[in-house]
Length: 262
Ligand SMILES: [Zn+2]
Ligand SMILES: [Zn+2]
Image (cartoon, rainbow, N blue to C red; front, top):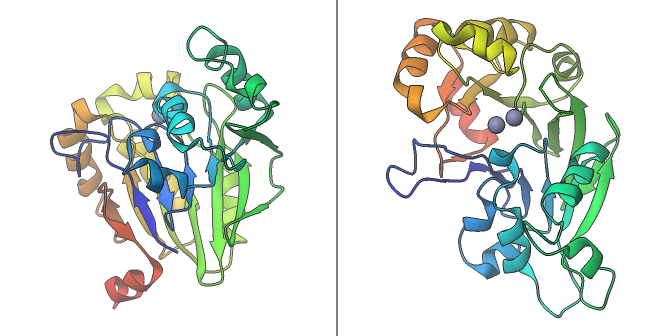
């Protein structure tokens, strides 16, 4: 499995992650913050499955363009997965004939644009050789973190979340877990905002890491760009042995974990 955080900034693309999309094996995306701005229409068309963590704009912003870029008269269309609440909000607030054409209704005609696939918590689905299990986390709107597994191991995409427990219980039951992508949105001085918005500061991040299986690679993501340097300083000060700061466009894969542990 190869996991890549997609770039969303024209300048300094590896470090400024303004919105969120993660691509796995070039065929499955988690979130659609910038997947509609990735590569060529043909490369986007190769992404047959998009799993949304939640409805917030930094995770869904490019979905209208993605659906437009991938449409063809072949009759094939991407499958968009999410909780019932997330998919309902897309229909009401995005594909509503005001913000964007109602492509959900148009998909009932000849050449579909997208297929909405509701998920249930902790019921895995198979997509392009991956097994993907949604787990409820703690955010302002209904949100899924995802456990993504293949024959070589598993990663967890933690999504936007304040302190949570169930995801880490599932992590302990997951064979071959080699990385967790965990948010670290705000600096410690903004703890009250982080709590109100159900996000993490580095200090809160540390407490989440303590709940995980030990030795797993932890990649800090969703760092608010305006506070990035401060958040990184505070994360490094935690001296967590397996901490990495997430980099867009780098490919994360299990073999490199073994190399880094060695
Ligand atoms: Zn959010
Ligand atoms: Zn977010």
